[in-house]
Length: 377
Image (spheres, rainbow, N blue to C red):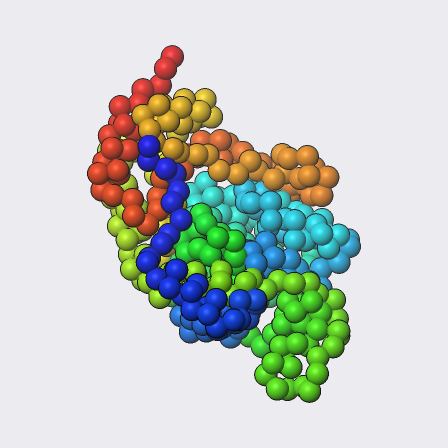
């Protein structure tokens, strides 16, 4: 059986976890949390990184920092994971969904301005598959309408847009280090802050509403409760696991891109024959090979293909059900304009196995079986 996903592992993880345990500092903000934060700040060239318990919590922190409140509206694509919307719904906001571009499955930047009302407070571009949204246009719109931009870069670690790391272009960015991501700590994430504006408040929110971070830096002689917050600090043991992978980030990235390119070359003839559609990487976007997907002709064909591959020992999956079509989507959101591509394109999309360690033999087996698939009529 070729699994859809295998969590990354480099070999140093257990050594670092052991070091963490022996240091007798295993809670949040230990040595490995600090090392991960520093690595991300230096590599991504961002003012501040705060490791969190998940990308979900990083996005919740961003919603708090943005001052999102009841009655506000937040614009995002419907084709995303529930956490993108949940963070703002928890603050009482209405989610306004915008259609996606069929080439990248990212929010259609040309439709954002039409979705803006006097209640709009933020735009949340989601970089699907680690491929950047059209950020220049989005940032121009945000500046024109005085909106906050929070990048959902859960899938975008090590991806760039015109040379800038995803998650560092908007006011805030959110990363995921879930076990399905390119770099993992089991469950985990990070909040990236582009400049100093939000740093002090972010530290307070992350530390249960206290100024404990200042206390540990010696800036105050005792810490106290100063604002609302929660416990968003991951265990330092989780950070130790992640740090081993960050040290090998370039190696992992190159290996994943080799797999992606092998898939693309091996399946190009099927696209030329009109049997599938392959991913598109726009000019100026450097992706991180987070996933390799293809599109079939229809939902029925996709369902048959997933079953066909499973019979041959290959686990493939479809992705999100668009949020606007869900019960909570109806309750907490609305779709701006027409759903021309979101549902239609999402029903065609199938994700193939891609993980650090997937072999060329595995890829050949998968691509060969894709070539053998025939639509049953």
